[in-house]
Every structure is written in C-alpha cells, then in structure tokens.
Length: 81
Image (cartoon, rainbow, N blue to C red; front, side, top):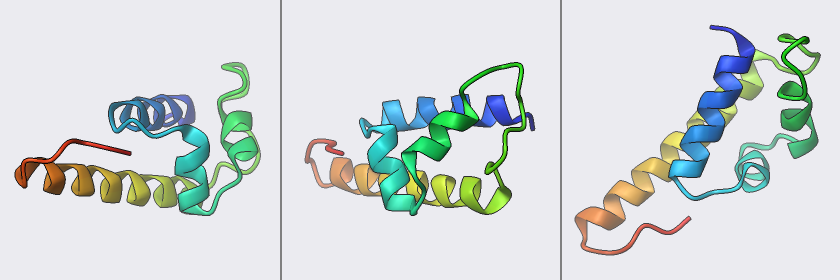
C-alpha cells in the first residue's frame, strides 16, 4: 500500500472517531511532526521516518478508539474522543 494512501486512511479514521491527529500520535507514541512530514508532499511518497512500526502503532490506537466508541454506543452513551 502506498504511504500517502495509508496517511489519508489514518486521517479519515481519526476524523470519523473525532480525534485529532496530534492526539492520536501522542497516544501512539509518535511525534505529530513526524506524521505531518509523512503527508507533506505527494512528490515524496516515502519520506524518512514512516516505518511499519509507527504505522502499526497508529492503527492499533485507532482500533482501540473505535472499540471504545462502539462500546459506549452499545451502552446507549454518546461517542466522545
């Protein structure tokens, strides 16, 4: 999968979960500056620092957030990031 596609997917999922990229990165242990460097330009689809470990950490945090939201919804609560 192309890195820019992964970056867009992470941004879309974060937006759907109502969490900022900065907060998502903080929770995943990644500097938000690193994430923003990844998406900085389409001409550089593989900037330094975008490694599988970092991307997996972001996906794990998104999955946790989505699971927490789903649990709240099942209990009749509101989704809150």
